[in-house]
Structures are given as C-alpha cells and as structure tokens.
Length: 330
Image: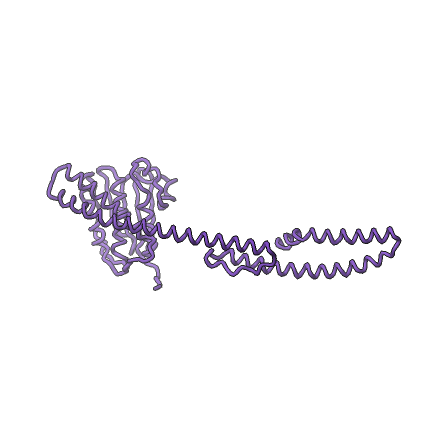
C-alpha cells in the first residue's frame, strides 16, 4: 500500500494534467455553444485507456521495486543484474553504481593487501622477539636474587603479551590450526599454574587446587591460552595474601575463583568487549582490554562457553563450560 501511494504521488502531475485538459476542452465547447457530449465521451474513453496504462505502469514499477529490494539485501560484489533501464536517468544511475562498485573493489583489494602485509610483519616480529626473550629467561635462571625474580616476572608478562599478539593475528585468519582431541584437563591447569608460580610466591597467594581428573574434547594449545589468561587476571587483581581456587563444577565446567577486587556491576556485562577495560583496568592503567575478548572468541571457536560472576570486594569466578557443540566439517 505504501508503494502504491508513493507511485500515485509520482504520477499525480500527469493525472492532474489530464483533468485540466478535459476542463479546457469542456470550457471551449461551452463557450462556442457546442454539445458537451462530444467532450465527455472521448474524455471517458481516454480515462479508461489512461487507467489501464497507469495500472500497467504500476505493475511494472512494483516488479522493479521488488527486484531492487532483493538486490539491496545482497553484498555489493554480487548485486546484479539490475532491472532493465527504462529511461536515460536509470541508465545514468546504473552507470554511477557500476563506477562506485569498481572503486570499492579497488579500495578493498588495496586494504586487504596492506592488512596482510601488516599481519605478516607482526607475525614475523612476534616470532623473532621470542629469541631474545628466551635468552634473557635462561640468563635470569642462573641467578637467584630479588631483582632477578622481579625481572623474570616482568619477562613473563612480555612473553604473555607477545602470545596475545599472535593469537589476535591468527584469530581472523583464513586458515585455522584447531586440532580437536580428548585432552586431560589437569596437565593444562598444572602448566598454567607453573607459569605463574613466581607471582604466587611473590604475592604470597594461596592456591586451592585439587586435580579435576576429567577429559574434554578441545584444542590443547588454544584452551591453554584461555586458562593462562584467566589465571593471569586472577593473579593480577588479587591482593597479597589472597586465595585462588581452581575446581570442577559439574561434569565439564572449570571454575577459577579469586578473592580479588571484583568487577563493578556496570562493567560486568561488557567485560568481553574488545578494548573495554572497565574500572579495574583504568585503575591499574595496564589493561589492554583484549584478554577476555580473545578468551571469548577462542571459546566460541572451540565450542565452549565462558561466563563471569563477580561482585566488588568479594572476588570473581570465571566459569569455562568445556562441553562441546556438534561440529560440521567444511
């Protein structure tokens, strides 16, 4: 109905012109004292023919409108074929659209090339930077002083940030290296805890962990990154003397609980957004807002879910539901 009203508004000039011409002829016949029937009969015939032509034009315009609506829902790359141009104006508009599409394709190709160059550069950089990190780590292992322990912790943070860069670059890559197998969960947890052992000792944190003795269908490397990132946040935001607990809830939900600062209620719905740091992140001035975002994206790829429950000054619990969805081979 909306299109019909719009179409009639578009044609109202021609309709008004028809009635105006009929009125002029009727006035002329009246002034010359000629029979008005000679005007009314042809006018009625013309009105019928005009209504038929108007209806035909409406149906054609409606079909064209529906075709354009379908094209509108398609990506620009496949937005064709356009309806046949009825006027020079339609032809001009289609020529403009074709030119814009060519320009868009050119810009898209250039942007993709630059993006790939950037990804390649940072991927090479991330791999190369691991060599001096490993060398410094070996050097610090031969020393046991408060300074060397502090430097080791800072070096571990650098290594973690480099790993985040690699994960971020690989996240949207064309290929993926996900390898799904039944994995024992305890070795993944122990390896993550071992990496943060120095920080546990330095902050005098208590670890409450009982082996979960369960197996899950997952990718070991990517799940390890998620567990390490969650554990890193727990260590970072738990004050000295606090407790971090790792336990299994139900059959396949891994929980990591801390007695840290907690998360403000207004921040909780947005903690998984990219680059969102919230109150704690702004207070510490070191948060990137990428860690939990990457965790959620990885869990989505693995078929797992991640959920956070928290309250200010009472701590936070992160729940990783490691049950899996049904995967289809592509």
